Length: 145
Ligand SMILES: [Zn+2]
Image (cartoon, rainbow, N blue to C red; front, side, top):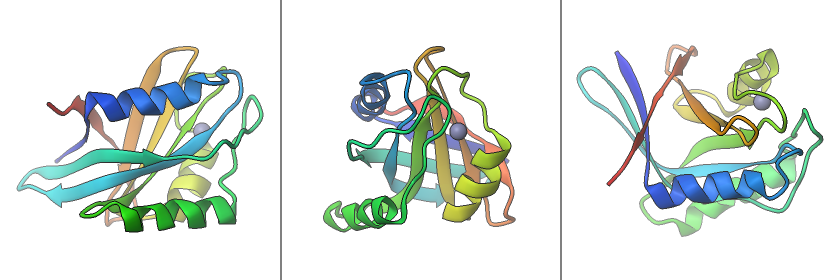
């Protein structure tokens, strides 16, 4: 079983640029696209992002209910794309899933969704996909041509 998250270079760049606006503070946003299954795995295409100018602290970012509402609404305007999950930055820390990232953030958005983390300091992007078994799987990040 494999898990892949694919980005167009433009979207990947837009996500990174958002986190670089104030790299010492955590921030976050939402991702949209498509998910489908192949015989051996799951493919997620990320074709759009949405974010608002909201900042966290150097080690925490909270998706408020109103921000989540706006993030879900943004999908309505993106024809053919669905709400695929979230991304957030790890201010001055490595891109690594914390217990909270898995047990609160990812669990909240649930099955069939992706969670991405970018570390501006370490220039490192990682992602996981929560499958239908409720477990979170490390995804390979690929570039879409
Ligand atoms: Zn985190």
